[in-house]
Amino acid sequence: MVMSTAELLKKVRKIEILAKGKSREVMAGAYHAAFRGRGMTFSETREYQAGDDVRDIDWNVTARTHVPHVKLYEEEKEITVVLMIDTSASGFFGSTVARVNYIAEIAALLAYNAIRQQNRLGAIFFSDKVDLYIPPAKGKKQMLRIIREMVASTAGKGGNGIEMALRNLTSIQNKRTVCFIISDFIQDHYEIPLVLASKKHDIIPIRIWDGIEKKCPETGLIRCFDAEQNKWIWFDTEAITETTEWHQYFQNFELYFEQAVKAAGIKGLTLQNGNDYLPALLQYFRKR
Image 1 (spheres, helix red, strand yellow):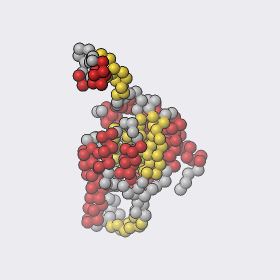
Image 2 (cartoon, rainbow, N blue to C red):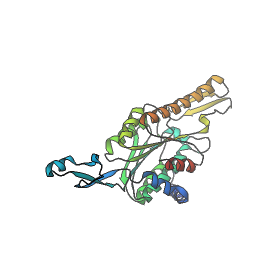
Image 3 (spheres, rainbow, N blue to C red):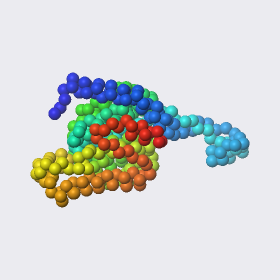
Image 4 (tube, helix red, strand yellow):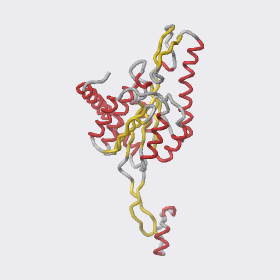
């Protein structure tokens, strides 16, 4: 169902207030400490002094002047943050709350902190393909636009959207970015793009799982709609074989996620849909 403009604005405002409140509690300091000064920019050269690192010697200037010179760098204060947000059909399901709403809250909190630190903020929305790209920019209007797009998003199809979104990030973002991938990761074939993207960018995968993926409700024969395949299926929740296959199906994606993250040499974060995400986020940032 498409929301009216008034309903959309009301929900955007509600999420904005929630993000501000959680940020003021405890989030801002941990976020700032985790991401400030992620790179170094060349500033100038000067003559070599005792104690300087020989790896910083500028050999071109040294050869031209016949006097050893070293390169000086400045810490980059501005960070580019990109939120990669999954809007595939599986995100519109949840045993407690719709996973897409949980994702929207986390994304809004990260967006608010990025803007609060005067960083550039962009977003990539994906389902089975890249549905929308919002180039990085500064300011509250940029944050509100991204929140509005999250709230107004409609379910896309399933598929290897993560793979395409990562390739899109690698091709269009020349400058190193901090990229949060917020998804249920019920996909595969993204390991190689994740490895390649992590060589260029600071990638932070946040996997959102739902309780029903661990245990199928035993209610007998039920008719389910597979939103990503766009078809109805019958499922016997009391049949041992089918419930085992149910758990194995989701476990395979969980294992693939762990394998892909390890191959990329990065640390992912796993959160349960509906649970308080602040403690886990804070612990993750403080470890950086």
